[in-house]
Length: 370
Image 1 (cartoon, rainbow, N blue to C red):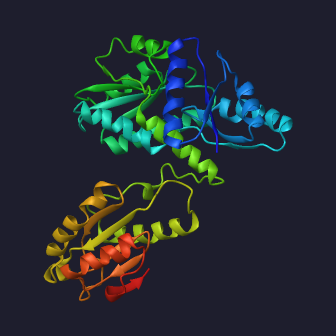
Image 2 (cartoon, rainbow, N blue to C red):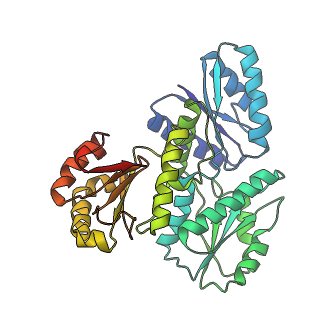
Image 3 (cartoon, rainbow, N blue to C red):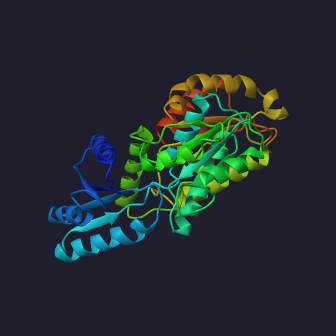
């Protein structure tokens, strides 16, 4: 299905160049034709582009907007309503703004990591800001998600029409006594807004990171929004814990609860977001399972599943006792909710072929399905 990428538009020619570059990258990634329209300052306008898309039967409308403010809630629906009236047979699917997409969270966390940032440092995420309180709150939530992933304090700030301003946020950050302070301009390109931000923060010793530009994470997020729209809707799962592995180590109770909740989530929200073909294996390394050879099993599992883990299809987490003593070593797979017991190294290749590659239960070692 064709797509229409809707950019905000700017008098700065770099904004149009960036939108053109993202249009080409998105077309390559999606394997379909991608049109381009602008809400302000440039041609084709949003309405012109929507009418053109309608004449071709419609498609997915992708807002190149960082937060879901007034343009998403007013300008886009109104333009699409006009296009629908003129082309009643066309089908338009309006996708979400980029918002809290995990690729954007990972982008800033990775940039901080490359700068050597640690928990002794701090950062201010600078958003454009606006009059929509929901969009501003979404920006604050994004800052918190980056903080969780990067492991250092991240405060939100707004370049215009909302508070705290970058200077106010940096003053607040100073109360943490950070070793180093970073300014994260959550903006598409180096333009007027970023210039104002840098000028206002000049009296603070901060390290200014680059804006988003045409980072691959932006194309990844747009392609996910496209796929969500095609699937007929979306769940609010950008912050869903099951979109991310729960970690290298999990306590017993959390591991069991996570397995049950992930199973329920997979059953009742299928296809709503890119959880993908992902399995999380929880291997019990409690005392009884260790006596049964769990540590040798862990090393063997790490060896024979390395390719799946590197490709993002699998995570392996050793846990404390999972409460099935005497039946181990115990291995739980979620979101499938399958519990295996009495495993030995010769079982691992057959289990991989049956469960991880074939999508079927490895019956010889099945204990239960939770």
